[in-house]
Image (tube, rainbow, N blue to C red):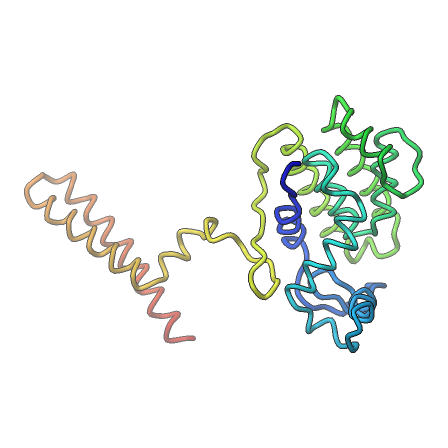
Length: 255
């Protein structure tokens, strides 16, 4: 049996889910990392735990809710790569039953909103799985555009569906997904992968500045015996490091 892709799919979903919010236009009410208060209440009640604010959602609870109520509900471990992620993200956003209907309509099978053996078999047998992803995303976006809250949340929803379409299409083709998946950290939040840190962020650290100065010094030494071109290069490096040092010191004083 192939390893579950739940962890990777959850990381991508969390990239689109923020922290705690209670937007007056959101019918779901208080929400934390995509988990609404009533879902959290049901989760804790089912485990004999007292009700509390979704603000206090723990990582283990987050993963359990996403796994049981969304991933397992759409048979994520049984669907083909890419399609599994597209349906999972749609289920988180609009409910597993609605996501199942979008998938079933894209596959041309009965749209009863319950993924089972027939739907899974059709997904596995689909000769153009990228077209299935497109069909699902098209239907998802069309429904979202018809909601009265589209003027408030539409821009974010459209961007999310576009990201899912792009990454899921790459997955079904066996290509690396273009989007950067978030990393679910210990507190359950989604942050940029350490490998994706921008160079300008790394340059803020004293260690990076010290390394840069050492390199610049070496270039300057080489320039002393190598001619005017090397002098120009050394000067440019020293200027860049000097600017970075100035920015770093200024930010530290302001912190």
